[in-house]
Image (tube, rainbow, N blue to C red; front, top):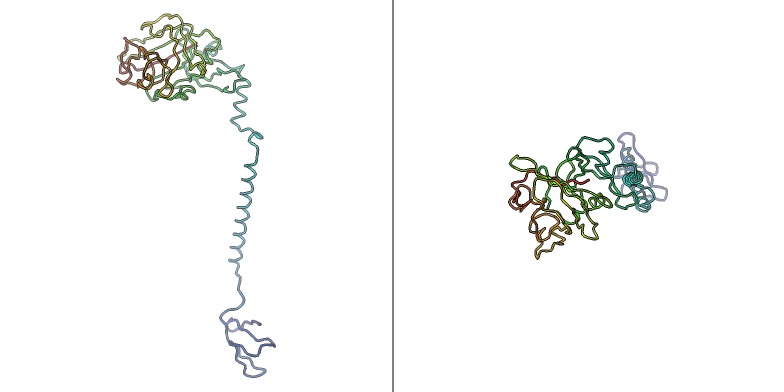
Length: 310
């Protein structure tokens, strides 16, 4: 079949070939006369809009295929081929740890005299846990150079935490925090450290404090058992002298009492059966029992605490 378009009306018409003599759309008048009758359809008129749509669709499909290929290649890349920025930074920190301060005392010896938050490096560089640690340094009390392992200044942090949280530490060094039992162990390992406890009273009277010598914390294999020797100066009772207890939390009961002291008194501590001193109870609450008995019998009497070592 052959199609033609008349100039007058721009319609398509069909003309029979030699083999066609009759068509439902054509009337034969004479051998030489052919009356053209419009047909309903002719060859498809492909406009530029359709071409553009096809090109865009093809480009989308190509982009999708390329993206899938790149994702597959990324999944197949070995994880140790290109270390991340964090991994490189951690490795670098541990590599140069020998030249950086172990604790706040070393910072003090290097001329730092202003109390605040500083970066220390308690771990050996070969230790898999080696990492920089943010700690609050007291550079004024009793000769300065004290590393805060516990601080409570505003009650923003709950100290009713699980074993892992006490192990790794929690809170912020600028406010309430526990530096972490792992870190305390590293800070006291192979050293003759002292512990300095402070309690800020709610009534605005003088700061309460107590010094202890020969402070040491064993590792996790001994449940972070504490060891404290002779006490030194202070204006509150001698409640922690000869402490030898492992650490307990509500999910890890290591005390000598029939009940779980950490679960009952809502905080982690070196409980025995159960306590006469406890600095990690619920903030400003009657549920905080005996922060430091008999001077402080409940948490409403306490407006701040700290445990400092050097």
